[in-house]
Image (cartoon, rainbow, N blue to C red; front, side, top):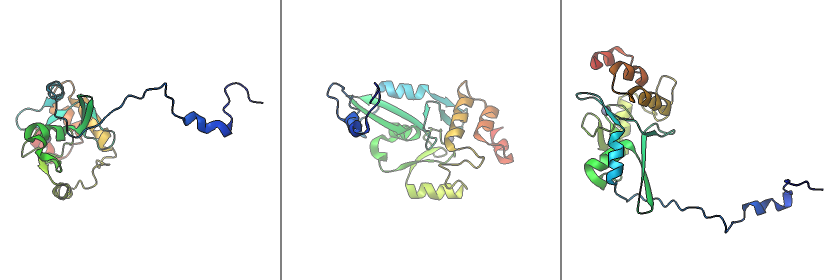
Length: 185
Ligand SMILES: [Zn+2]
């Protein structure tokens, strides 16, 4: 009764049996491997720097979840993925920052400038306290203007890809308030 191509229900489980002829490449993950020279170069090649004391915007991959930049690299058959700002902290401080979070004093999730006014090592508790003080508690999902953090980050990345322009950036970042205008110009 079966026509060719039909899968009889009683035999369905056989579709999930291991196939020894199919080799699935292992993707061993490590939280230990150090950044390679090539990765560090690739990272900085994707950073657009605002002049003066401004943000340094990472223009590589953006996480669809939290809206942070993402960087993945491989070394010795292992791979490691980090948020771009955590990667910047790793370059600045080494793995001493394990267990801490990167706090954005500048409130720009794509910023990778390790500086007291931008990205600093912090604790989860202090980071949350700062977020509340800035009125951005729960900001991992929302930006206050109807966009997700990822949507905002993708807009910011697109705005700076061809070079830094404060007006284009301010629009993409959603900085339309008076205070921001005064600060930017
Ligand atoms: Zn910044």
